[in-house]
Image (cartoon, rainbow, N blue to C red; front, side, top):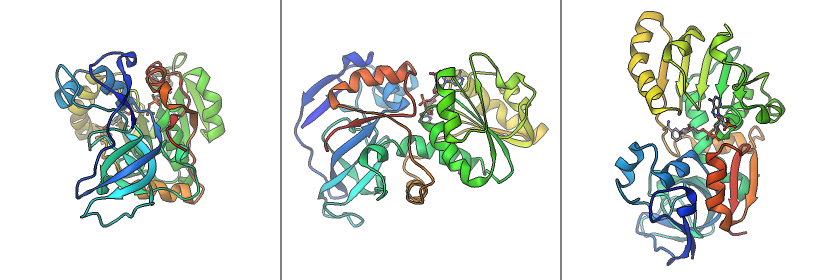
Length: 323
Ligand SMILES: NC(=O)c1ccc[n+]([C@@H]2O[C@H](COP(=O)([O-])OP(=O)(O)OC[C@H]3O[C@@H](n4cnc5c(N)ncnc54)[C@H](OP(=O)(O)O)[C@@H]3O)[C@@H](O)[C@H]2O)c1
């Protein structure tokens, strides 16, 4: 089968397109024929081995992940002897970040617990855009953020995967949502339902004096105290990503700030595939449809990871692997 091979850390042009054997599932796994995959910050990090903390998990000098790629949508071709939830022919999707990756290939073996049935009303290309970013949004806004109707909410870095899916989750709650991103993404954000938008290169949302009940941040890069100032009484700030220094600062000072002000500031630890059936429900009710950049062909994966890293994408970059 065709696969993208990661033999050393570096810019995405170190990736090779090669041929490897189709894997064989163990008793708890299924063999998936991958129709589509999407690109995530996770891929950009694993390919470069940056930030350094990635190397503590995936190999200090050389990557232990032979084939990157976390988000997939496809069809089951074979099942292991202990598999109970799926049969050959089932259409599934999921996030492989906790089971060794391998999504940038024609086939992958996946433990059955990492997969859900694909929503019936959208294509594999659309489906592959959902797992990683959709669950960061769901876990941040609903599970941890406990969004309630009538609230005033801000998403920072709102024109990427998390923000463009997050706004669609929020629409069903009757809330007012502000989105912050670069100028090129603001029209798309308005079309998705953001009530107001800001260009982060022109306006620092923590300096406007506006306060929010809930802030979801995909790119924390300011002081924890500035974020606390932008929250209403008992407000919540949840970050899913940003500079390592800022994430440590939020984890450390967040627990002190809540004692003195009641405002909660925390770092979300992503739980892959937890809540994926809820994402399918949003999609099947017609409340969520990913914004897809693409679909592109398999051979373009290395340059698309670079394109992602440079922040030039709109929504989710999708690769069609097999029709
Ligand atoms: N917590 C966890 O366990 C966990 C797990 C996986 C991933 N993550 C994190 O989750 C985040 C993924 O978000 P995503 O998939 O939505 O990424 P994305 O598609 O790259 O979107 C991020 C958006 O933020 C914008 N941006 C860049 N710098 C900004 C700034 N200073 N202020 C405001 N916006 C800015 C980017 O636009 P421009 O580039 O045009 O400026 C881009 O549109 C990443 O930070 C990733 O590291 C967290």
